[in-house]
Length: 113
Length: 113
Image (cartoon, rainbow over all chains, first blue to last red; front, top):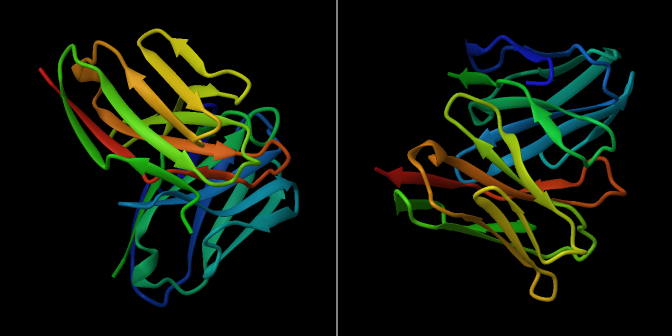
């Protein structure tokens, strides 16, 4: 699992509440990613980071923000959760070049009621 | 827009048979084509990958066939086993871009004993 942990692993929340998901890596890799996985859509990139305080938007970034204040931690925040953000969220890292092998964390299942 | 189209959505194969999953892409700048395997409750994991300078890559029972002119690539699983039952994602990326890993929508493979 390339030393990637995600927390929480499961969360149920209500529409309109803020939610923060955490991704932690133990090996100081530069590139980190947040994806969401939904049936029929595969994995879609939300945001990614190429260094401390260096982040950029992915394909489905609306409604999400990220922060990376330390190399090992990449946070994903839903400022005001909506039911359309019910999904499984995966964090990933790249080992070496950004588009080399990506290693994924175990995922966080988020349900927004 | 769906830059990587994957088919079929689901596939059932008898034990010992050949499983074939197909993908097509649009962006001719893509130059790295990985396949990921995902078991229920787990994050995706790299299975095998190919670059467009070769037409085929084989690792054990898994083979990628690549057709650059048709912009298509496929995964073949020979002598399919029940343990191969999983969801498979094709993907494509440009080496020059940290964010441009595009995943297909996934194929749920079931191997009947």
